[in-house]
Image (cartoon, rainbow, N blue to C red; front, side, top):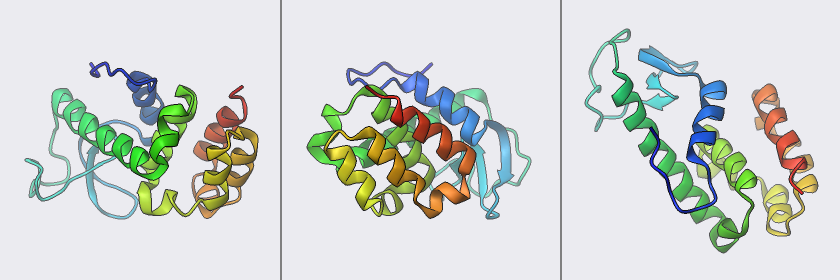
Length: 156
């Protein structure tokens, strides 16, 4: 299971959301860009024990969790770098949404959401959701993006 943390971020909830958005695969497969991947969208890197293994290689549930934990930690740390002191003041729901977005696109792309990020800094969740919809990302992953923006709008 996912380690409990002291922050408002509910890691279990983020995992459940990402299982829907990314899927969970217990074998190595090629993603839509042709990169070898497994688990919850974990890209096989040269430092992974799976590096050099063939597509179709079985991956244990324990290894899938381990890779997810590492990837989630990276996403959380990248959110903290991007949003700095605002991060700790965001409601847990906003943190979960941003972690999902970070997991999907990474800090270089998420940092380009200038108007959305300005609205987030001011606690204007509805404005932030409107700006999130005004993006290439939204058009690329519309179902996922719309679910996230509806959640963002509903934060009180």
